[in-house]
Length: 278
Ligand code: ATR
Image (cartoon, rainbow, N blue to C red):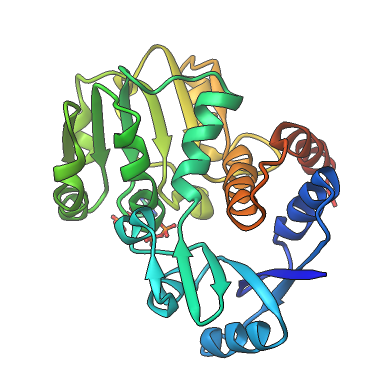
């Protein structure tokens, strides 16, 4: 039986084993998938032991995505652009590092949520690791506008500069939250970690154009603080990041196994579970 795992610290709340086990059952793939806790200073060692035991690949989560990038002997273009890796594949001596987070976000928006991005004005809030991982896939679907806004304005500019050559015909801009005054967007994506502190970036109300979609890369049982603010401002099309989680897993699964699972059924099952407090 082929072995896979997700490595993180902490790891006990990871939903990846449930998701991948459901994918395997659905596609009749003979594999096992476990959660592995690595010590904070022991990521490479945990990977080495898993490989030595016959592991075929791992997903990598907080706080090891940068270390996984350094450990890979080969990087896909999107992993290189993200500067972070969430999927490692072991191929003999080669360790391929990939990043499926951005593809997961884009697939969730376009396919699951019927929220097209091509020709739309898209606002990305945040300029940390989570935002960096999705900039290239967002530019690749050709929005008319992609604006990055961040609390620390210099980080927004740095992120824009790193991807400026990929902008094509998109108007690609960066700034602080106050610079958003007077501008409206069709899709607003929260990639800040503010929700973790129960906070919401200070956003001008105008950013949600009529019919706008509000998307939070975080997820939870009810509205995240960002989604609650959007809803209070009259936004009716909203989603949290549970779909992104399932889609990035589907992308990793497809890379490893060569078959794409049906993510919709797994997503609706997870959503029902999330609604019931543990
Ligand atoms: P991650 O990997 O989750 O992106 P990160 O790299 O630490 O984590 O980045 C966190 C992001 O959330 C940053 O964009 C951060 O803004 P700063 O660059 O100004 O630090 C943003 N962030 C965190 N808490 C925030 C808050 N309370 N209000 C607004 N932005 C916040």
